[in-house]
Image (cartoon, rainbow, N blue to C red; front, top):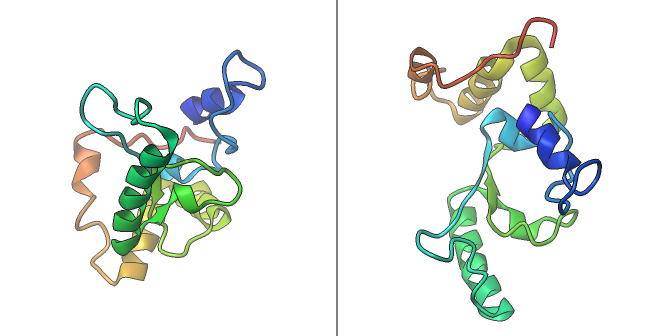
Amino acid sequence: MDKQRALYNSGRNEPGRIVTNAQPGRSFHNYGLALDVCVRGKDPYLKELDLKPRYERWRQFGRMAERQGFKWGGSFMAFKGDLTHVQLTLGLTIDEVQELYKYGGIRAVWAKLDQIRGVPIGLEWESLYTDSKIVEPESGS
């Protein structure tokens, strides 16, 4: 949430450009349900390409991601141009995810996704906890 707060403050309370409209807790990134991608190499965001070919490359990526069930950031109405962003929420809204997280942490969010998918809860992600990769919210958060 601290990273999200810093991103949100960029271009608002801190120098830089606005990079997100999501306040802490209001991004699917905060729950492991979204990611941003880049291309391997010297031009990871394809900024050296002219606008039209750059957009077409990202649009190809977006179509590919959507075929796999992701929602592509290039199709967002509120924050056009989030071409590198994809999310997989399986129909959950950010309000529903926040509520799950508030009362059960990240495990509750991911358990709900497993329930929606119809797979055994935790089978694919529970081992992440033993690797100390997931940090639960502090008590009272």
